[in-house]
Length: 165
Image (cartoon, rainbow, N blue to C red; front, side, top):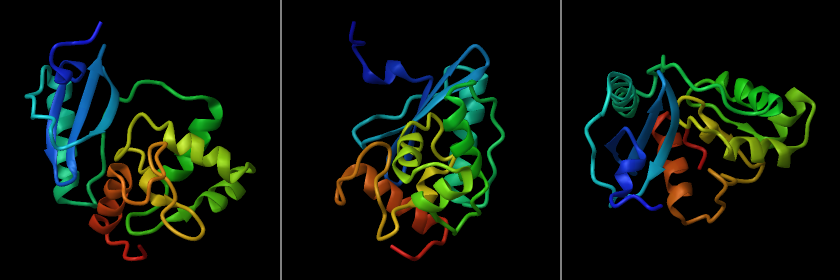
């Protein structure tokens, strides 16, 4: 069944410089953060946790050093969690390549890329800080160099002070 308003999928939708961020909460945890195109209208938070998440996302969008403190749903495979832990340790303004992350955890770059694309909590787990050896690479399971998601990756890296791309 398709909801009549796509915003019904989210507990809150907040505007962002690159479009919008959808926030989904359930049972006291954040279930998902999603990058949304500009045509998504804002939606006020439906509950205290989505209000907290919205405030934190807005704060990050103004202050790239802001650190998130949200209860996240326990999702992901053991491998994905290993990748996400490495990604979470990359400092603002820095990047690692898929190959570098793969070497750290003893895996393959393509598998790291798949784990990055499967991240339910972008911004909180900053998968935009992982790039290809020769360029930006993909983002959120998209690799179109001029597309919406790659534009978000560029914006986030610039916002955080990385000037390599």
